[in-house]
Each structure stands twice: as C-alpha cells, then as structure tokens.
Image (cartoon, rainbow, N blue to C red; front, side, top):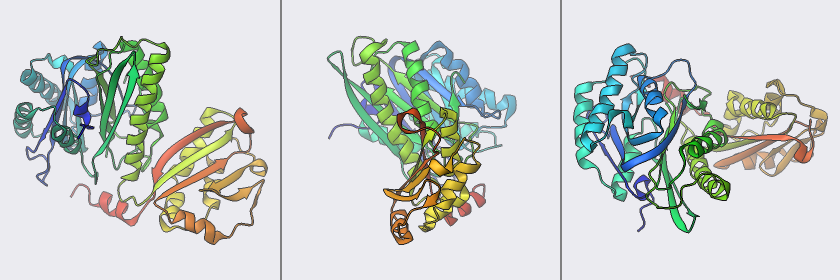
Amino acid sequence: MANRTITGAKGFRAAAVACGIKTSGKPDVALLVSDVPATAAAVFTTNKVVGAPIIVGRKHIQSGVLRACVINAGCANVCTGDRGVRNAMEMCALAAAGIGADPDEVLPSSTGVIGHFLPMEKVRMGISHATMALSNSAEAGTAFANGILTTDLVAKTAFATVKVGGKTVTIAGCCKGSGMIAPNMALPQATMLAYVATDAAIDKRALRKVIAEVTGQTFNCVTVDQHTSTSDTFVVLANGMAENKKIVGGSDLKKFAAALYEVCDSLSQQIARDGEGATKLITVTVTGAATAADAKKAAEAIANSPLCKTAVHGGDPNWGRFVSAAGYSGAKMNPDKGLCKVGDVLVFKNGQPTKVELAAVGEVMQGKEVSILVDLGVMAGKAGYSHRVYTCDLSREYIAINADYHT
C-alpha cells in the first residue's frame, strides 16, 4: 500500500516517542526531518502573547531553509521568559546534533498547558530517542501525526500529488488542533500546528507567496472557540527531491498552489470536525457582501456565536440566530434583499420567512455536516464578496473538557 503519510514525500523521515511529558504515557516528542536542506516557509500566530518556540522559529525561518521540525506535546512553553527561549533553542540544538544539521535549520514547536517550564530532562531523552527512531515508513509518518496531538481525538492527515514539468510532486501534511482554535496567522511572524512536507523544487519567494495565500483560504478560516492560540504554526518544507524544474511562477505555481490548497483545506475541515466536544462539522458561507472584510466579519460572527453553535448541536431549526448574528457583525446588510439557507432549504428571503416547514430544517440540522448560507443582500451575484468558515457545534462535552483541562 502506498505511503500517504507525511513521509510519503521523497526524502523525509519522521518519528515520535513518549518521554513522560504527558501523564497519559502517549507519544509527546515528535521529529520531522528532510534528508537534504529544504526550502521552507512558515506562518505563525499573531497573538501578542507567544510561546518561546514562536520567538525562536521566527528567527530560524528567515533564511528560508530548514532541515527539521521538532515538537513536544503536553507543555506549551508559553509565558516562560528567557528560560523558555533557552529551552526552545536547546530543543533545536539537540535535534540538529542528532541529524547532522545546524540548530538554525530546525523549527521548534510546543503545545499543551501554558505557564509551565519544559521538563528538559525528559525532553532531552525524547529527542535523543526520536532521532534514533527516524524512518521514512508509513508507520513513522503515522506516529508523527499522533505524536503532536493534545486533546485531539484523532490524527489529521492529508495527501496530494500533482504533475509539474513531467515529474510527480507529492504534498503530504498533518496537523493537530481541537480547542483554542481560531487561527490568525501571518507572514513573517489547544493550538493549531500544521506541517507539510513536499518533494517539490520551488523558489523560496514563490513558496512564501503561496503559503500566505493558502493560509488565508484554509487554516485562517477555521474556528472552534474564537480563541487565537499563542502557538499557532504552519510550516512547509520543500526539498526538491522530485527533481522537477524549480517552480517560480506561471502555470506550475498555480498547479502547486492548488494541490497545497487541497491538502490544507482537508486538514482545516478535519480540525473543525474534531473540535473539542464536537459532534458536527458546520460550514458557514456568507455572500452578497460589499467588501471581502464584511463577508469575513459576518461569516465569523455566525460561526463563533454560541447561540448558533448550540442550535446546530441540538438540531434546533432556529435559523433566526444565523441572520441575527450576521446583522450584529458590523458588516453592511440589507435584510430586505438578503436570504438564508440551511443546507438546501431556503428559510428566509427578502426580509421574511419562507413557507418551509421547520421540521424540514430540523431534519437537515440533525446531520453530521451542516451548511449555513447567509446572503447579506448588499451586492448581487458575482459583484458581491463571499467568505467561508469551518466550525463545529458547541456541546456540553466542550465545557467539561475545558473546565477540567489543567487538572
């Protein structure tokens, strides 16, 4: 069977081991390595409070070249001052020594509880064992995807191939994210961590351009609880081992961007689907907006509304909450020309409810996937701006998970 994990791209190895950071005994140190220096680009959280790994990672990504990513789960290394930064740098140095790289060629990440120092004795042991366990097997790729998790219930992976210049290029990714999810990442700057390995040869400026665009269309369009993490990170490593002609622009860049979007869009949906306590994936789309900013405001207002999310959880056909949320979002709206759909069911048009039976709406909302569309009625057809957000329902389980998270 073909390897469709992150090690499915040529020249990448991975590993994950348990070193005791997590009280569960599950893997908590993970390592992703390119056999050769890889062109790299990354985006990070825009939260003013950032983890020590973000401070280090922003410096290390400036060269546009990486050999590895080293991650620990169970401790976020956030609000830990200079000691936290030194610990993040030591993680890089340890990983680099194990693979024969420069510490500046390693990107660190940490995820877990804020306000605790890393147990470095355990981390040192974990990184040492991880470097010895590195493999390009599917099992190693799966282990890596599981080793970065915190409250996630499932690992999240995606895979795509694309023909570029007669060569098959592989793009493989994995991510973690279940709670504390409302990514707001920008260049060059629980937690969303995403890693993509590709064997494509691509110009570093082109990669930076593509990652910024794709982030805006995928990871930045996911929200679980409107809480932007201190540690959000998305990084792409491109090692060129597919031996394609270097992608600089034109049709080759468009094909690569489309494949990267496919991978990241899949991962984004998986994050929303696995939101803490989630039972349903919700796709919110807003159309007919005067500006792109207005479309985004309205879509996020609906997706983040506890009233909207609880209505979907209970299958309550209270569609008025969706229209109301768009109305208070601050976006320009003309309800007399707007509409609202739940799934394919039109429930509101031109300022008034349709004649549809609420039972039909409730039936749609009972599904595992629920789509909500609100047209703001400001700009008609293609003249209007639109925006799409993935989110999930809000359940009693979400409250239980986050009330007991630290303990």
